[in-house]
Image (cartoon, helix red, strand yellow):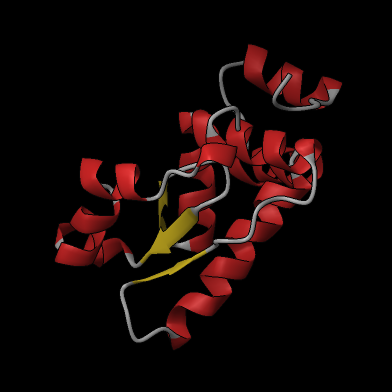
Length: 130
């Protein structure tokens, strides 16, 4: 399961409208590693000379890795994180997440990061089952 949802959040969903802050609180408590990683990278972005800040440190354990994979696999979660932190997310492997300045998605650095070539070049044997 990706998220641990409260009865109140289920009620909001059944009524057709979930409050963004409530959804983000659910993401933050259900996937704390992923939420904190994106938040940390978003905080590093303003000081970067390039268009993005990225993580190249593997998660400490399978639990953290699973949180990150679940967050990146869900469009709703990913987009909520992007709106909250005012970034565009890009994901290459089981730990390489990058946050881009939203206006840079038309730029060369973003295109290079999300390219097939970068995907292949960022593979390592230990990532086969990540």
